[in-house]
Amino acid sequence: MRLFKPAAALLAAHGASAQLHQLAKAAGKMYFGSATDNGELSDAAYVRILTDPNEFGQTTPGNGQKWQFTQPSRGSFSYSSGDQIANFAKTNNMILRCHTLVWHSQLPSWVDSGSWTREQLTSIIETHIANVAGHYRGQCYAWDVVNEALDEDGTFRPSVFYRVLGESFIPIAFKAAAAADPDAKMYYNDYNIESTGAKQAATVRIINSIKRAGGRIDGVGMQAHLIVGSTPSQSSLEAAMNSYVAAGVSEVAYTELDIRFSSLPPTAAGLRTQAENYATVTRACLAVDACVGITIWDFTDKYSWIPSVFPGQGAALLYDENFSKKPAWTAVSSVLAAAATGGPRPSTTLTTVTTTTTTGAPGPTCTAAKWGQCGGNGWTGCTVHGSAHET
Image (tube, rainbow, N blue to C red; front, side):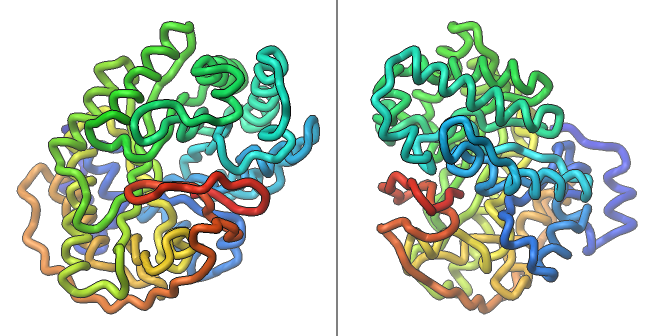
């Protein structure tokens, strides 16, 4: 674990007011961040927290850079939604993780329903990436080049890309992305690859296949959509990260972290368990030097994707719907503070918080106007086209 010398002075100066990004950097990590989406930027109270440079130093656009929005019809490119988030990040000196170039969901129908030859679909992928990644060239710390290519058993999803090109669509995409935005880190991003198992082993094979094909892959993004009480052990989390590093990537990151309750409202005991689960993930990242940072999939339950996709579930984030910090926030900050000072984890009293969570439609129809992806534990999925948005 890397420790920065100014850490002790920083914490002494700020004490209990030290915040997540500030503490993560003091502990040797690059960032602690939060995803966001365009509509949320009109909420002044939300923006005040997101733009606090000590709390969040990185952001990811939840939707605006996806194929559905960037090339809704063939050859017609639009960047307004993605540009809003990219400009927001630049204005607020936030690291920008760009998301995502090739994904089976949130595709316009012209891509998914086409009868393509190998040559045609290869050209479509390369043209899309050259335009989108080229438009954002120099603005992105990293690209999630390919998102969720794997089924739960470690086989490939039967996406249009796989049906036509087989697994070669992945190195095709990585080569195109590296050419279009050469200074950005190239990531494979997926859920349920946070711990060891069939999907993790398949991710290692993806790393190897990209390298064999002469492509560049720099990192693996572990989405980490988890369930309270079912979070993998720290040792399993570390083993998965280390397997990716051993396969040849230089870094890993938690890219979409949330830990949801499977029933609501959460109890005081449940909130303590959630806090412990968040602490476990944070400790795992701290224990692996190659883990560069943690991104939560938005920071407040007010804008979580969970209730729309998993009816009756939610309260997954570090702040409640009223922007109050939950016990999970205290646990994460405590673990980061301990790592920053090099000492034992401080004894922290977790405050009981009452959270108000609104559970809404549409559930399995996946026609919500936001966050239509995404998965994680318990997700059997729908493939989203049209108006739904991913996480």
